[in-house]
Image (tube, rainbow, N blue to C red):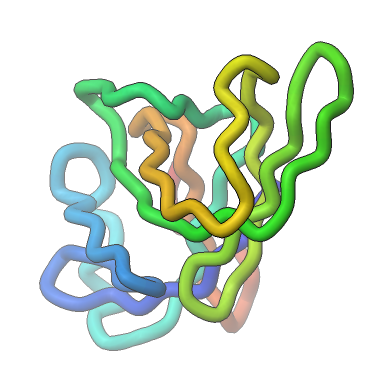
Amino acid sequence: MNFVRSKVSGGKIIFGENTIDLNPKLGGKTADYEGKEIIFGFRPESIDLNSQEQAYKITADVELTEMLGDNTNVYITTGEDKAILKVDPHDTPEIDDTIDFYIPYENVYLFDSETEFRIAC
């Protein structure tokens, strides 16, 4: 699971260059966290590099790629946090590229940064 530190502001979470509107799926569940830090979580295999409806769009910088045969691990940076994506080897981005990827609404997990309890999923 990837864990990215983010801040709640106006029903949106902010991390790196990303501002994600949580309202389509999770907005009401973060009202008590306005102005606070939370953790945005997602699994490496739950992403798609192709645009999707019903998904959050994330922008990140590619630091490294690791070809493993049936998939490629893509090591990314977004803000101060790092994460790993699993992609089809035919879709492997170049190192130092800035990429967009999509996480379906149902594959996002939010955690309280102090207690580490799940806020919503």
